[in-house]
Amino acid sequence: MATPLVIDYYTDVLCIWAWIAQRRIEELEKQWPGEIELKYHYVDIFGNVPEKMANQWQARGGYDGFAQHVQHSAADYENAPVHSELWQQVRPATSANAHLFLKAVELQCGCHIAAEMALCVRKAFFIENRDIGQLETLYVLAAEHQLDVDAIQQSVVNGTAMAALMSDYQKARQQGIKGSPSYVMDGGRQVLYGNVGYRVLSANVEELLKNPQDEASWC
Image (cartoon, rainbow, N blue to C red; front, side, top):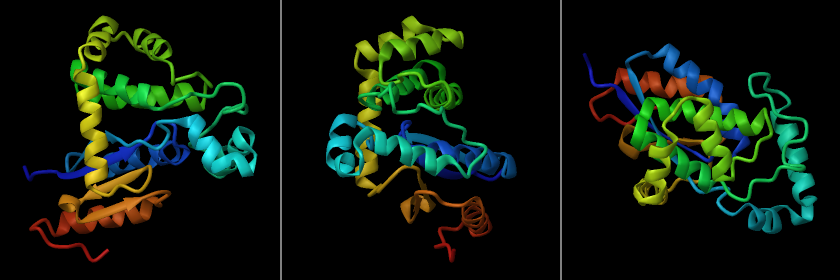
């Protein structure tokens, strides 16, 4: 069997565009079973939410303006439902705790379970309006999904989860990741980011699968 095409997938769990992209990721894996391998990484976009709101949204209504932006952004995507009060009362201070938690899950339970848990974390925030900036909320989610909370906490306490997260953040800087979500393919030669349509993603994957011998894609 041929070696699968690796797609390094960078997101911030609080990013609405990554939530919208979830359906596209699922469709990619359905369309190319066994031919692509998604490697999930995290990038620091909402690491300091209060600072982000003050610097980027103060003149546009602050949290209320951002909440309206999120609702407007998601309105055209029926596969990316959002809670009607998102960002209004529940305002996570950071995405870093969720990223840290998910790296701990990856270390203890493997990449597949971590990917499933990442979707659960996003659903908890975008649909259920839960504060995923708090570790306690994340540990409750882990318990709800029958994961070993003590083992996950140990990875957080002993620093191994933090080391894995810092590796993601450093790789994101090294690869020049500009936003969330970002798709890195062809050994870093091809980077797509933002609200990229499914047809564009699929066309790039198809071209790389057709030309696997270190050829630059024409797409």
